[in-house]
Length: 78
Image 1 (cartoon, rainbow, N blue to C red):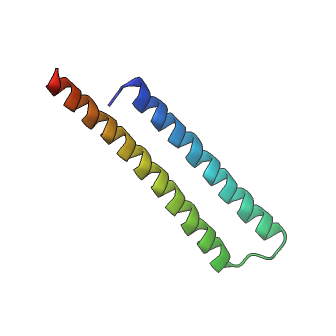
Image 2: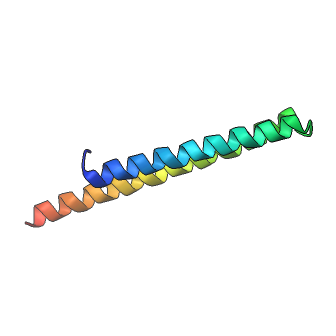
């Protein structure tokens, strides 16, 4: 790790995940203010949020690993 592209990918995923968490908090706040949200609703939203974050992290990790694999293959060829 440590290349500029990897650092950019990590920074982007952090930014995306921060936005996801902010959206989660906003949705919960709005639901609670309107007194229309149950514990089950909160749990459903939380699980969906965590699944999205997990997907983002796995996709970014896979992207970084694929780039590293390509670099290693290129260096073996040269």
